[in-house]
Length: 118
Image (cartoon, rainbow, N blue to C red; front, side, top):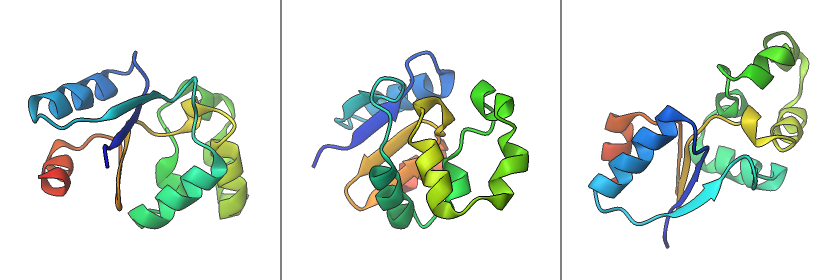
């Protein structure tokens, strides 16, 4: 199965991750997060596979996250409410995401990607 690389073209971290994948000859299907943002069901599945808390899927450095004052709001939300919110706008989701079968990588940490994908 070809991994799905979910990214935002203008994001420098996504650009670095894409270059890393290409440099390591890892084929992938690219999916633009802004135009084809993840659904709540996809996010729920990926969160379960990753074992990460839902909060780790939020782009905490994003403008929209700050505008919505989510630092204050997330602690009072259920996981389902967080997943529903993430599904409303791809710019709320931490990127890049790499979905490779039973592996989900959130954000780009070169050492983690190396360990997981090699």
